Length: 111
Image (tube, rainbow, N blue to C red; front, side):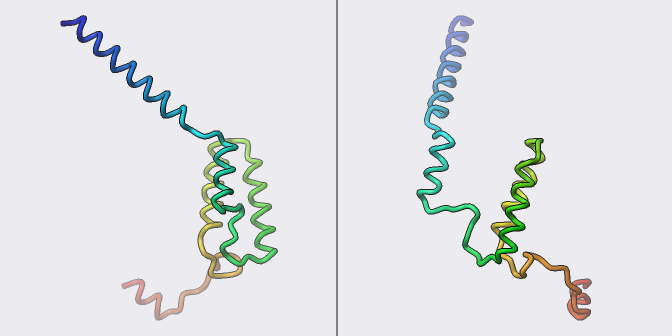
């Protein structure tokens, strides 16, 4: 009984190893992924909104700043926030504004 159980464990481990190799083997290289991304009509930075030259310049500076962060985790967190900010629609020239809420709306929000 124990011999059969050991054989079954070996078969299962072998199948898992083969499946992992198959999945990893089907991945495209980073260069191939980027090429396919561009072939699908994607561009960076995104151009679906009308950006002012000043906004584009500010975002390019921010991108360079983020890419110079030495720590991978910190760089990733900043990159995710940067990209989300780039992809969200902007309703003002800066992308956001701090404004005073009219008292009538503020009163409704407090209820």
